[in-house]
Amino acid sequence: MKAWALAALLALAAGGGKKKAAPAPQPATDALIHKALDSSQDKVQACVLDGAAPGKWTVTVKLKLTLNSAGQIMAADVKVTPDAPKTAGCVEGVIRGLTFPKIAGPLTNVDREWTFSSG
Image 1: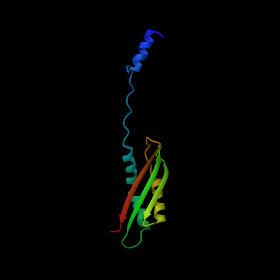
Image 2: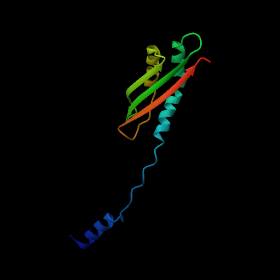
Image 3: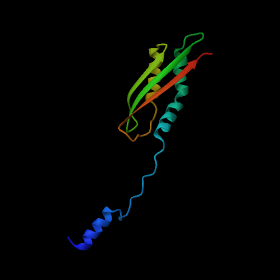
Image 4: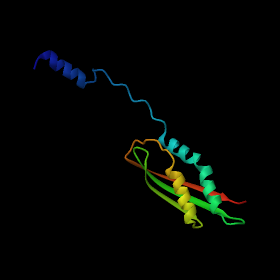
């Protein structure tokens, strides 16, 4: 190997080559996911109100999502307390209509809880 080629290889290995610019920082993915969920609160509330019994009540909606790297919902688990399958189905429809950001990892899990009451 020629001496100049060896010197060039050693310079590159030592960091003497041109450095690539660092990628621009991504917006906080968690914040973007929570922003999407926050934007659905009025629609989730409408689902709860539609299924609510007359009188005084409190309803808790617990959501567990699994998103893939493209921001697509891979799994959605909605639990409503007290149990209300129609309300849970309505909430799941609202959540599946949202757009989520792309994420860095292959999958991410998201938990969210809302509590609504009549007074």
